[in-house]
Length: 176
Image 1 (cartoon, one colour):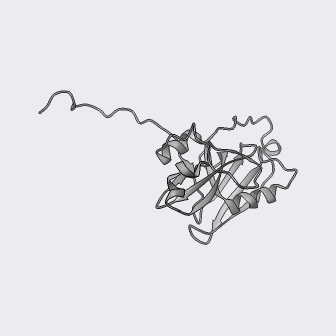
Image 2 (spheres, one colour):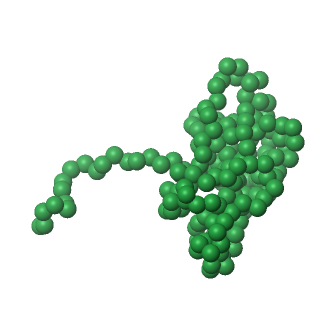
Image 3 (cartoon, rainbow, N blue to C red):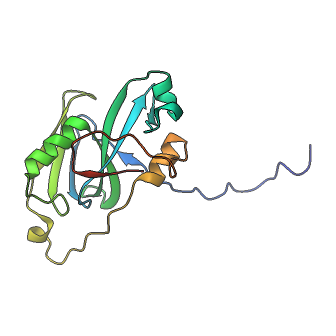
């Protein structure tokens, strides 16, 4: 046996990087929205998502003419597991949620039950509940968190210094 690359013992501690929540069919997600606006990103899909970069010449997905789709991200408080996490929503769902909250409504502090109907590609429905202040006076929501580090880890790229494509009309900010 060679020396220097193999040793016996316990595995190193797991490094938790977080994950992105997607609402599965048949599951309700009661949550409180922490983000004030959507974090937005365009991605290419080819078996898994990869980011779409604004500089089309340096975007591998654009070069290969892979299809693009928009994904919106919100930081939420999951009322099932009582944890803060990021939620991923497709474009139609982002518009549906923005419409449900209304033009003068606030996302931050809005309690909502999200349900997916009709399979993995089924539509998401949003049942707005009372605001967090009404049901839990004094409950302090955490600060919003940028999903960039989690997305970089999941996508396997370092996009921190690159600009992602963004050509939607949603009131939001870029995820990267």
